[in-house]
Amino acid sequence: MQGILRIESASKSFQAPEGGVIRALDNVSLTVAHNEFLTLLGPSGCGKTTLLRAVSGFEDLDGGEIYIDGQPVSDQPAHKRPVNTVFQRYALFPHLSVQRNVAYSLEVRGVAKAEIRQRVGSMLELVGLAGMGARKIGQLSGGQQQRVALARSLVARPKILLLDEPLSALDKNLRHKMQQELKTLQHELGISFIFVTHDQEEALVMSDRIAVLNGGTIQQLDAPEELYRRPGNEFVARFIGESNLLDATVVSVEGESCDVALADGTVIRDCPVNGLKRGDPAKVLIRPESLVESVGQSSPDERTGHEISGTVSESFFAGTDYNLVLACKGLPPVRASLRAGPGTSHHTIGEQTSLFVPHDAVHLIPGKGAPA
Ligand code: ATP
Image (tube, rainbow, N blue to C red; front, side):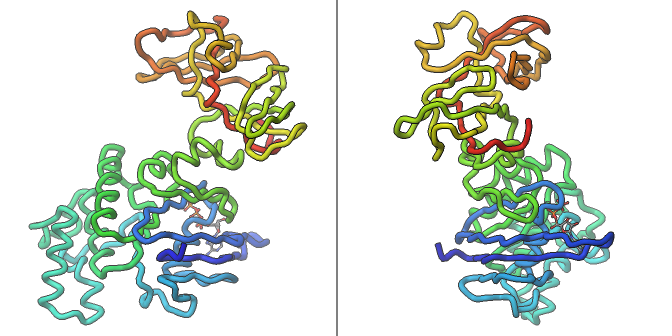
């Protein structure tokens, strides 16, 4: 893929004030497609902002190269690059009007007054602020300020818009609304967005693809559903969504499927093999919401799947789900989210129960991984 942005083997280290070296970016490569919404997701300190700053030109790389529209940009200063950034705290000029905030970058470039008026007007309309041009920043709500920041970044028609946790200062409802608005805006404009967040739910909802970072490296770069269903390693499995990760060993392989034995001796049959061989260690990933109640159902064999039995050690109702923790002999605690509805009931602590693991709910992650 040629893409609008190509990052090749980007590396960046910082001298830690307390001594030693921090590898903020460690050989990072990725390509962003035209009109793509790509999210950089990862825990605090994983290198998201450093990567964004390297693209925008505010941070020089130690090694590697960045190409925008096929052109290397390492020698281009920030103001010459066809990218713009929306920051977490918006960085608006509080003493200027909405109109002047949005017009600023065009004024600096010497764009003609009439053109500025026309472009600022259509930008304010696009972000739903038509008629508010004369207001001061302090006379706007948080969501409106966010829209001004967007308009200001888009008015210069960048090829790529970088967004560094732009919604984190908003309350939950407004945040959800802005997530939808941003997605719609990106679609309408046909610009590539690179969005930074440490909120996995936000990343899943908004992105075409997500790059999960940890310790300055990309752990996995995939579409949201693929990341969720088939995480490539234990870090990604734990970082995205809730997970049960059980130690297992592959006991047999046949074509594209294999049987694995859990620590308590239970054998789970016909799992997707995922490159594993007989005798290999693996982690079995089962998402809590993919477990179903066995009580009163036909036997597991008839429904091709497996049963996990144990004692309920935690149980609470969470509106749409009943959440349970099952203490099972020889296994770590198993979490389940059972959809609340006809046929599902509250389980009491201490109760013996069985949960059914449907066949397609199992994903195997190669390797032993970290202890659960
Ligand atoms: P957050 O989600 O908390 O914003 P992040 O993923 O954006 O984190 P970065 O800001 O890219 O992380 O930082 C990556 C690592 O580099 C961190 O360990 C950070 O402390 C370190 N770092 C970043 N900038 C500097 C600097 N100027 N000097 C020293 N260390 C730095």
